[in-house]
Image 1: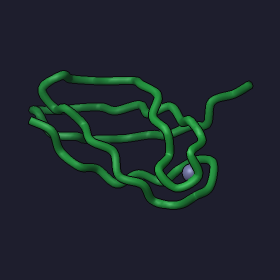
Image 2: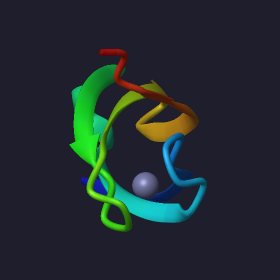
Image 3: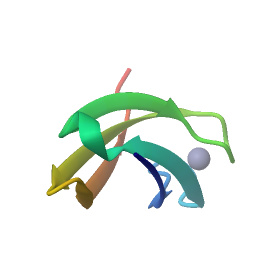
Image 4: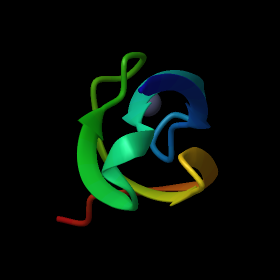
Length: 61
Ligand SMILES: [Zn+2]
């Protein structure tokens, strides 16, 4: 089941919505911010098929 989660972009500081598949368990992946189009890394923790924590960080270059 996918759920919409709001996260703060580490690049521009604006809230952006990401969709998380809770059945997939813990995930780390790269998503483009819908506001500034910069790539960020999402670290998602899932407990009992619900999102328990999301951290974001910019991609270092
Ligand atoms: Zn952004």
